[in-house]
Image (cartoon, rainbow, N blue to C red; front, side):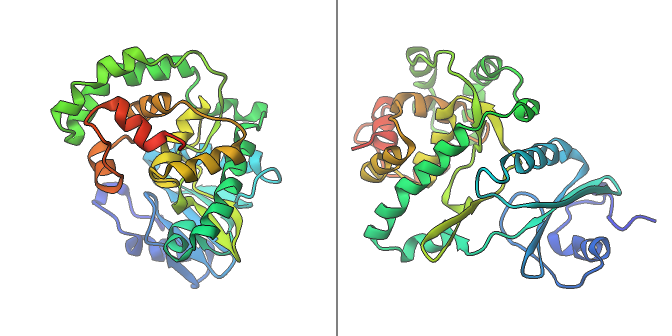
Length: 291
């Protein structure tokens, strides 16, 4: 008899899965985390267990590969064990010390933020510099085909998110005018944001949550940087780019934001500063311009 309930039984909460996690590990000191799209549990003080339902097996393979390849090169969780039970996959990994930058951000002084931001740029540059043939298994197999596919459904996608039609009407012409070229592909985190960076005593201790990792154009990672790290602050973005090592094109960043798998502009408009004009060109400069 299996310990994990079938996913067909309806929406399963992290609490519903807790007995199965305890049985899997043979431990009772298991506490669910509240954040994240997949069920994640603290195991004692030093370990984390992440579960992948049957429909998320590709995400498990992606995260396992990323941790195996990046361990020792970047500060990432150390992979302790991986396996499958009752159709569910799991990864057991070390717990990064400290708290997330998202938690700590409001308490940081401007001086602390300015000191830390270039270090984040260096961290992302280190990721993008990794060249390991084992990462070739990550999607997409062809970046140009991925961009083309996203472009074909971009209007429908943004209409489904509820984006105002005045903005949606600008998207095709804007994308036609932005030359994305054929850039070299690099390892991408795709959600490089404060919520996924751990900090302790003012120092970065790690970057986690690798299941959406991809191979693609470096500027695709700057979507999350502009939205969820520097958040429209041009001075902080300039400092981030100083650490990263070179500049980015704001219009390309916006183009990739429009094409991003998880793009949700109605939400972005709630959390980001309004552009001086209701145009995509103005928006690109407001959110990804390094002033």
